Image (cartoon, rainbow, N blue to C red; front, side, top):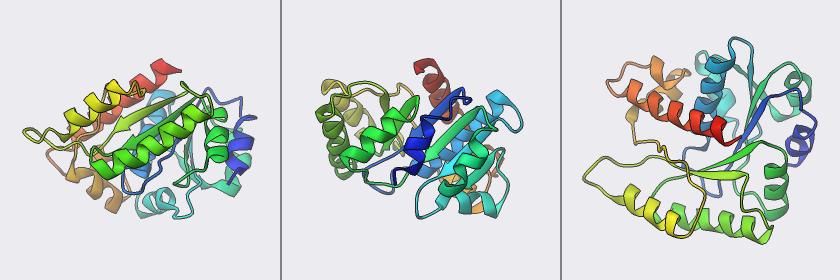
Length: 218
């Protein structure tokens, strides 16, 4: 699993390379990859963005096969062929990166995005990743994204944010609220704004804010 990370260092035609990883499944890694790629595709125009699916589950590829996404999705072995033709690249990695893999990931991109849900188990897994980053001497180059944040009055999102801020973990100010529309989008093979759901536009706006922050951080 070092192929994409090593080659990414040579993809310097790309203006932006975002990599999405997590230590735990079910935290929105592929949802985040798909919607950050969608955001960059809107910014760069048709043909500007490539999503590299480096996860053996191939969730991003299957998402695209069920419908139509506004960017190209390729498997990891195809990446060198297509990367040189795109300005923006998003990499959806395999989960649970070991320390050496994690270091290669952060070195091979402009920003490493680490999604986490606000529940205790996910935060425990996140802190393993953050601890490994610190052991590697990496205190920047990555940001944590809170996903599947429940609506008010449930306060788990606010508590998680306060805890991470106290620990000085780099955080996106924006967060992704829990929306059924994301599952509908995955089932239909489209970005979330294309599904019939009264919260779909709000769900998309959450990722637009994350995309804007990511571009500002690079």
